[in-house]
Each structure stands twice: as C-alpha cells, then as structure tokens.
Amino acid sequence: MKLYIKFGSLAKFQNLFDSNEFIRTILRQTRSNMYHIDTDIKEEIAQLKHLLDKNNIKYSISEE
View 1 (tube, helix red, strand yellow):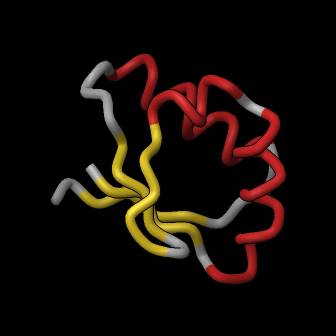
View 2 (cartoon, one colour):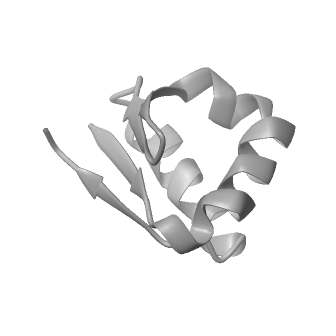
C-alpha cells in the first residue's frame, strides 16, 4: 500500500513522522510526499489513519 501526503500537509506530517516511532516503523519514504506502508495488519493501518486524522493531515491511501 502507498500513503500519499497532500502537499499542504507535508510540514505537519514531517513533525509527526519525526516524533512518532510507530509511524517511522511502518512507513518507508519513496518520494517527497509518498510512503510505502510496510504492514498488512488492519489494526496498524487503522492506527496510522487515526494518527493522521487526529493531526489534521490530508492524505490518501492506494492499494498499489
């Protein structure tokens, strides 16, 4: 799966990424605003979405 961060949210996301070990563990950056999600565990993906939503980060997730 791929996580796309909207450009207007990149700074907020970078702060969250730098301060959150869980996010750093399951995401691998592939481009400036794209990350590969290194988990298939639904609970971890739900937790990731919750953290992004809680921090008002605009994103989309692709199954590719």
